[in-house]
Image (cartoon, rainbow, N blue to C red):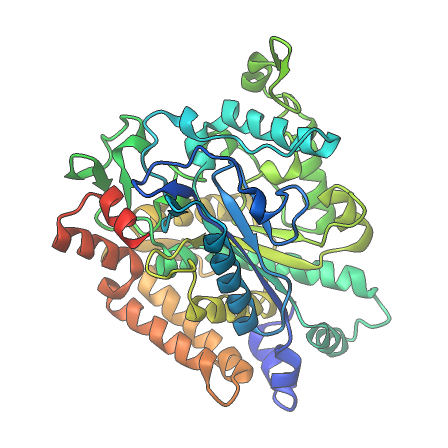
Length: 470
């Protein structure tokens, strides 16, 4: 795609109309727990509807892990209101001694078998979804699968695609589907390059319960007997004890193009993996995996962003993408915001929209092997010690290491014109970006720092702290 500032001049005349109107949606997971903080053992409440078919209320990995889904909306506020309404409905239909856990990281999991795997009935698709989850248990363990997060879905406005095609003179050279696919994969590559910014700004999991670590506490500092942390961590959810799992560390999924992405995913789904072959497909008569390959299905790949399109006629995600192209991206790096009753705040969503537009418009070369290693280093480093003073990250586009503070300052400067173009009368995008700038200047204002500060002030175990907030 074009450089950002080559685009800016083209947008000035009709900027707001062209940039606004992208569709936004949310997917928010929360563990269902009892009032003493233990993971609920009751099934997904019938009053919530069938988890297999309900469009807005389903389950993720566990019967105790509901996932709330909002429909696509042009207005960010509408998406947030819908999410609030879903929460209110859930609580009206929930057992009195149960509630939603307000944190990404689960507690009270010394025995991970207390995490009940989701059931979807006896239909073929329902059985498949359950067996897939059994496979995840054998491959990664249930603790990892019980981690909750928030996904932000975004679809680029059609008018922006039209403007970009006209500005490139590509109307007669490339069809609309191919142009969009190229654009979305440019966005995805840039998001990967800068994905560390999300846990830095919004990470809310700098601390975990001892039970989650299964005794592997040597890397962590002890806060109280049952609580461990890292002093500069932002999002342990996005670290190697969370989704950066060693089992998938060797996966090299390509974001060069839609074709290369689908090819590398297919290779992972069809390539046998010795460790999973040793587990086998059956435990006695019981089927426990869909396959013994590197991935059972496409969604097993835990990427921080995915190209997506709406499900159609029961097709596999890859078939829909191949036939109809990318419709939107799913941004998966957000922790559940512990201090917000709905797990996400308005400023975060405004930033994510502007940031994804920036990723679309900025120049986006292909990712080399060297840059991929830097991307992985930056992601894990910021998750584990993102608030460390003068932290250096590898900026391959710059050609040398750069302090996180300087890099984020450059990103914010380039995002500011986009926020101004997105702004309505309330200047919401600009104000949100300026408020986030303050947290970069004073990292004690970041959510991860505030959580550690509150724990220290109250001298509470993380379990007790999260239970009180929940």
